[in-house]
Image (tube, rainbow, N blue to C red; front, side):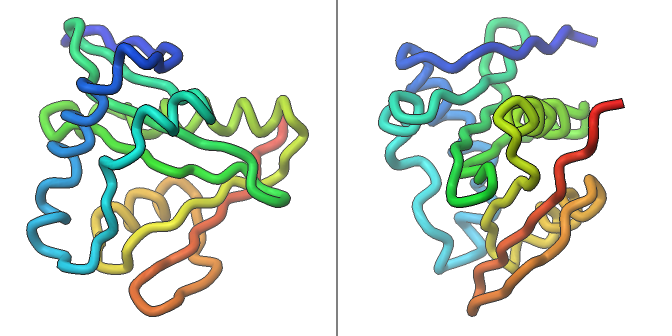
Length: 149
């Protein structure tokens, strides 16, 4: 199995991150007509919030971008390329966000997703996230930050 490494995203990654997002969201973009644009603004997101990429064999196979919104660290986007799914990459990327939240003394993670992205919602629930609110097709999920051992 190839090694997966995490590193800070840079503006040089915009093209590869966009490709990762397109591949990861392809089924949802095909099947969910009201899914918002998930690939726009990658450069702005990296410039404003940073982000973390997961690399395998010099290819970007995962991406997360997050920032503080009110009392929580909001996950703005998370994607794992289809051929890299099932290897714990999403969990590792979310761990990075949780670590940042803990360092900033933020006690909660939040994200928004579409209610019809059933596999995505199931993954988050498996990782300890709860649905906090539903508004039409949008779900707001949240997770308390685990305490340091």
